[in-house]
Length: 377
Image (cartoon, rainbow, N blue to C red; front, side, top):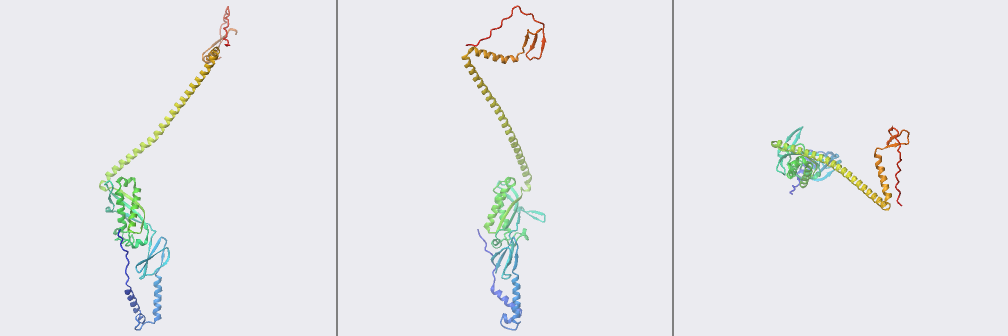
C-alpha cells in the first residue's frame, strides 16, 4: 500500500542568518554586527543579547501531564517523544513541542452526528446492503485512542472532515481517514450477513468483526490509532419499508415465543411421563418377583411334603387333613352343645352369646366313640 511521505518543512539557514544580522543592526550594534559605524558599547549589546537568550531558552520549558506525550521537532524534523514530567526543548524557531493527550478516549459517530442534544442523520454514510440483498441504515459509534503518536502526527495526510471541525486534531487521521475506514469495515461485515443477523441475532458478533477489520485497515495506513470499542446503534430498514420489516420481526418473535412455550411444556411432560413409567415398571417388577418367590416357595414346600408323603403316606395324609381343618374351621360359625351342663348351654365359637335351651332327653344307647387313626408303623 502506498505510504505518503512525511511532511518536513525546509529551513533556509542563509535567510535566518540575514534576519539575525538585521536584528543586530536595529539595536545600533553596527560595530558588532557588521564591523563598521558607531553603536552602543559592546557589553550593553552582549548583555541585552544574553538576557534575551535566557528568556528565549525559558520558553522551551513545558509540562507534560499524565496521560499525555510531547512530540519534539527540531528544524521541522521529528526528534523524539517526551514522557510525563517537566521537559525542555528548543523553542521556536529552532524547535517546537506539541503535547497530545494520548490516553484520552475519543469517539466518532458514523451515520449520525449529535451536537448539543440534536441528532442529525447522514444517510449517505449509514445506508448499506446486507448479504441477503436487503437495505438497512446502520449507525455506529467508534471509541479509540492514539496508539502511536509519531505515526498519528506524521504518517497520514488527512484532508479533514468538515462535519467534525473543531473536535479533532488538525490534519490528523481522525478526519476522513478514520471515517472512511470505519465505513468500509462496516459495509464489508454487514455485506456478508443477513439482515436478521445484523438487526437482532448476532449484533455482538458484528461489532467484534467490524472492530477487527477496522483495526487492520488503520494499521495498514499507519494511522497510529488504537480502536477500543465499536458499538452498533440503530440498525433499521429505510423508512419506506420499515412497517413491513417490523411486521415480519413481530411474527418471528411470536414464533419464537410459541416454540419456547412448546419446548417448556415438552420438558415438563417428558420427565413426568418417564417418572410414571418408571413407577409402573417398578411395581410390575416387584409383583413379578413376589409371584416368582411365592411360586418357588410353594413348589419347594410341595416337594418337601411329597418327600414326607412318600416316606409315610398315612401320617402325611392325616397331617394335611388337620392343617386343612385348621385353616377352614376358624372361618366357619360353630355351635357347641354341652350336655353336661344343667339345662344345656349353646355357645358360639366367638363366645359372645350364651343361650339356655331345654334339657335334652338322653339317648338310650350311647354312640360309641369313633376310632382315632393310628400312626402307620
